[in-house]
Image (cartoon, rainbow, N blue to C red):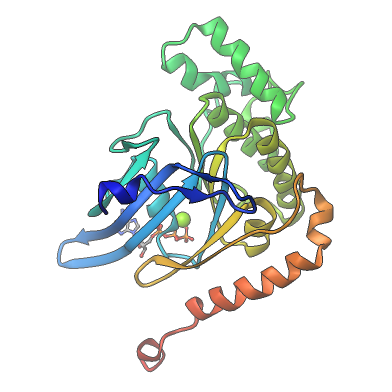
Length: 280
Ligand SMILES: Nc1ncnc2c1ncn2[C@@H]1O[C@H](COP(=O)(O)OP(=O)(O)OP(=O)(O)O)[C@@H](O)[C@H]1O
Ligand SMILES: [Mg+2]
């Protein structure tokens, strides 16, 4: 990728606006080596994300979604390629890309408020100021009244709200979410998707959201980028043409069903065994 390319403008989905990308992923390849065994987890992944965009990435299990997100967050290094956030290379974890992990953990011995305030305190912000700021995010995610509860006293959905508040309190320039609702029951998951749309509208944060679920990807995203497996790569992308703000009503929209069917055709092809694998 040449410096000229990295300055190229990208179109904000469903608008005529062209902007400099906030996040640029240039030619990422990742190979894991364990002794003599190698796993080519990602190959030639190029992706640009606009400031304020909600990008969703569905893909089959094991296609490298978490690996890609860990590289964007600076938790894992790429074998080849680079990640730029606001034009700056990401090489190690920082608070600029805020990560919500696939199996996000809270401190069980700390209250909701202290869990949310913890990264701010760790970043040497005053304890009182940190708790004040944390309370704003506890309210934003709808947990007002539960600030003194402990994680063990909360439902799975509430615990994910705490994890989201904790990540948002760091005011990340991009919020990286790895299947945050994957462990929730189907109904709680639907409600959390609606909540996330509300919270995203209130904060305007740029989001990269990984999921197995095509409907979740459409309902939340401005743009959907489908990943394929063996090795992990981008196989398809399209904008989501559903009006915002999106409430549960959007899930009944015929356009959502059509888009689901189209994306499922793409994803299904990626999940079917290839000729050489089927014959084994
Ligand atoms: N630390 C590691 N060492 C060796 N191989 C790894 C490591 N992390 C991931 N892999 C391999 O890389 C590939 C991609 O894994 P990854 O966890 O990124 O997939 P995923 O798309 O997030 O899967 P899932 O949807 O199940 O969460 C897999 O084949 C996995 O076994
Ligand atoms: Mg994963």
